[in-house]
Length: 383
Image 1 (cartoon, rainbow, N blue to C red):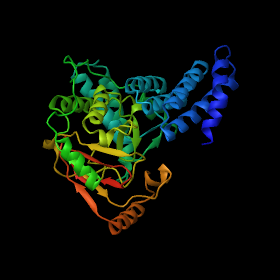
Image 2 (cartoon, rainbow, N blue to C red):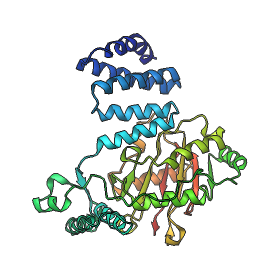
Image 3 (cartoon, one colour):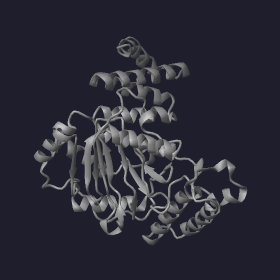
Image 4 (cartoon, rainbow, N blue to C red):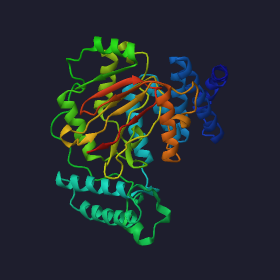
């Protein structure tokens, strides 16, 4: 309520001034007004305010083209405006602008990236990448020596010795890529014969529905190939790696999937624009627990597993708790890394006492679709 009048009063004049000025204070004013217009437009589902927000970010970025925070918010606003093509293009630009050397590393991450480089060479990339992979394996061995938690411990690059920084080299810049696939990407993401009427009814009754074989075989194969190469797994977490839009995860199948889901089940997905997507990758030798208890700040959550069943030994899957956190909780209160295993175990006991828990067993290409404010966590696994 307070943001909208400010935007309407001040933004038109700021946009007019931006046509003939390169004043730094004007750039600051534009990005502030853009943020306010984004907040007001998102809260009120006001398409006109969202368009004004994009115009203000565009004007700001003409004056301050290196502001990656503004680039991110512009991409987020395009998502809110349901301009998927524009949003994916904006996230690709953000990725290109954000590339930088790593500020921290972990042994398991270095081993993953070495495997990616080696796999790229096997598929036809420049063989000189093998020397880089060998150096990362050497550094991983040095950093991973010691106690059992050393493999997942994040180490600041600034704390490395000169010889260790030499082994690290250009880590953080794009990993070697195999030659582009010769086959065209699939036209559709979803399998065609899904019973969406039954899925919608079950979701409405239980706040959760599980669908097997969500993706078409061709789409599953394409996403598996993308995740196996792993060139965009640039987000380092405690014992696992993440691949987010700003990390370069702008695969066209994600865009297709979002559009197809909204068309197939409009009562579930239609009212809500795509807000965020990601892929997580784990090594069960160093992190057999997956992701801990959390809730996501969204309306609908889709968890989809991509690893082949042949690689699955035991466990895995998802626990979804009926109990939800209070409204208007800060995101960091419900989606965070816990200070200790005891703290997370105490929350788990509270959730188990407070209500029912749904356990979804692991299966490749199985999707769990549920109301996103429910606490959920990975189940322990071995692959």
